[in-house]
Length: 205
Image (cartoon, rainbow, N blue to C red):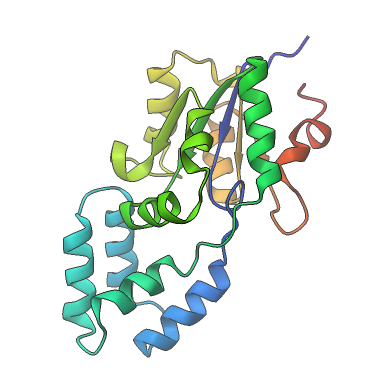
């Protein structure tokens, strides 16, 4: 009998494909820098945690890179977002229909990315409706891999860590979750697909 009762999923590179390397290369070229300055990394983190608004975020970039238009900055920020394969939607819809597990989405994201997804992924609302809880970092003012975001999810839903599996493509995120007693799958998006969750982790199910 499975002890897993709750599946907690990341979003990027688990459901929607990302181009992290391409987005970074594009940004470095656009901003004419060799690496992202610490200040930019900090601003991006604040934005992802909902601690600054989209307007403040864009204003920071237009102030620091006056040659760039607002549109160029938004396009560069959204460059990372790619396609959302239909078979992954079918997978989560089937899980929602089966009602065997509580389904939670826990994503580090931001208002600009979610707006782009809502506009460009025709089935975004159907996808969202599959989950019992849908947590986006900028809406709950917490972000992975900080322990408090996991504490929040466990507490809010009255979950036992050892009855959950958390799936994420970022090792720092799964490491924190594992240290807190959650079962984890650090998915390698280059070789693995979320639809193989039960085959790859069959010892847990």
